Structure formats: C-alpha cells, structure tokens
Length: 423
Image (cartoon, rainbow, N blue to C red):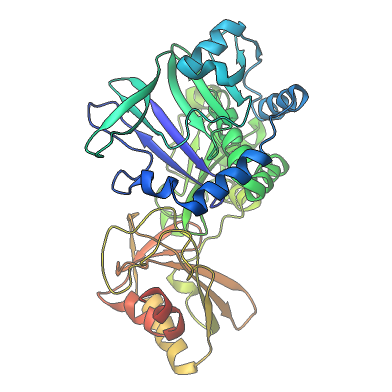
C-alpha cells in the first residue's frame, strides 16, 4: 500500500491519504478551482515575494538534517545510498532537486529531495497514488478530469512539505524507517510546535513508533482534539515489575486500548502475559512518561468552576447539527473560551458527568476542552464533541456516553462559546 502525505506547516497538520485502487484520491480539494485562484493579482504578488525569499538549503544544512533525523532512529544504522538510486526517486523532476539517499543492510531506506531553485515543478499539482504508482496531476482546461504531469515510478511512499521544497521518499522495495519519517514530519513540517514536541520525545525517552526489540507500552492519549500515540520502551526490570504485580487496573480507568503492553520475547515465552491486562506499575510509567491522566465518573464532584475552550481539529465533523463547526482547523472561533461558576449549573454539570456510561471509542470531533477545577484545587479534563454527538472523553483516553441531549445541554451552559461556533 502506498502512502502520500502533504504537510501543512501553518496549521501543523498532515493529511494522510492511503489506498491503491483505481479511484482518484486527491490531496487537494478537486471541487475548488485552482486556476482562478492562482491567477489573481494578490496571488501573483504573493508568488513574487516567495520567489524572492526562496533560499536553497546548503549542503551542510542538508547533512545536519540527515544527522538529526537519524538521531531518533536507534534501531537502524544508515549509510549513503548510491547517488543514482537516490536520484531515481525524483523521476521526471529529478533535475529540480538534489537528493540524499540513506539505507541499511537489512532493507530500510529513505531519500530526501531538496529543491535547488525557486522554480517549483510541483506547484499547483495534486499528488495521487493510482494502481501502485504515485503521480502528480492537474486539472485539464475545462476542469473535467485530471491530467498526468509527472510519474514517480521508483517510489513506494512519498511525503512533502507544504512548499514542496523538501521531499521524503521511500524507494520501491525498501522498508520505511517509521520513527525517522515521523521525525521528518514534526521537525520540517509542523513548525516550532513540532520541534518542541520532538524535544519532549527525547527528554521523556518515548518513541513515535513501536520498537523493533524489547518490551514496550503503547499509550494513546488526546492532545488537544487529536489522539497521540506513543511508545515507551521497557527495561527488563520494568517488565518484571509489571508482570509480577497482582494489582490489575480496571480498563474503565485508562480507556479501552488507552494503554497496552507488548512483552519482550523473553517475557512472552516465560510468562505469556495478557497485553490488555494493565497493572499499577504500567500505569505509573504511563503517567510519568506521557502525563497520562485517569478520570472517572467518581471524580465528577465538588466542582467549583469549569472552563470550556474550543481548539483546532484537523478534519471536518461528518455530522451536521447546530453544534457542528462551520469552518476547518483555521476557524476564527478556535481559541475562544468561557468560564462557568454558577453553582446551580455546576451542580447540574456534575450530575451529567457523574451519570455518563463507560463506552468504546467514537469518531467524533472532541474539540471542546472542558477543564474542571475541584474544591481541593486539582483539575480534570473532559473533551466534548462539537457535532451533537453524546460522546465525551474523560482524562486522557476514557470514552463515556451521556444520555441523549446532555452534551448539548453542557454546551448551552457556555452561551458565548456556543454562539460563536454556530454562526
């Protein structure tokens, strides 16, 4: 299966398109005319500014990028790829880019393409994966069909920055170094926020992909409105402590699949532990390394204030109700918040949250972040769906279902926020 990514630096989000069927899978919205927009006077001025501002990345900086990316991948030892093999990933645009290819002895590899000049051969093109071939295409004159412009025949996966000045390829017949590729995404495509996240990855000793060897915990948690999946490598002593504990945590505390345990080969053969059976030592590790928060219905009491904030989501909610957000992740309503301190409403809020039922994960836009402050000063977080869905997320990953209409009732307690999102 081929994968194509477009990285959007301004919003810090990626659009992941997979699939190798004959069907067209556009990266850019084909319903929007690109020609008219590109020919506007404002856009022409913007293009002129971009042309003047473009500076190719120096050879020294390119090597620094390679070194930094590979510092995240301790599983593999890379060496330089044959230059011709690396350049072949560029296909028909190879002359517009300089390429650095890196590979391992056991079949992992990647290629970085750095644009040489201000001329952008991929400008205004959409990238597709069709019948296992990645193509760059554009609308024909009457915008009835897409026409092929370039083909990347020697590529299994392709990722690129919004400006398409840096490309990331996995050559055909090679395995993707996933940890390294994710480091590329965060460092070169997600701006300062992505760089800061990578710094915490190193500081906390976690990974963005599963380790090839040894035991580890998989931790899923919400960061703003998105699910972040991280992996915690375990030492032999930590594994023995996890499997030797009789204190088993109820999944209600951490959510179904919120934390799972994959044993090392040695522990698996000797003890064969249940991956879904999480003990207290495992939970403590997740709390320490990933700031995992467990919240249940029993925590919904003695609430002295509640603040609701709307945060970005990376895709439009599928449902269309009076709570559905009109705009996408760059909506002007993002970042607004409202405080609730009315005792009667807080009491009703406690009743709703305490009466919800534990549930499985739902595909809802949980971009309403409700921070509850309790009488002892502690805070817990509940995420509300903004599309009329009655699902909520308590803490990091525990899903709860409220009675019909009760999530909408919570939104009604914050009239200023609701008024903005339904405009």
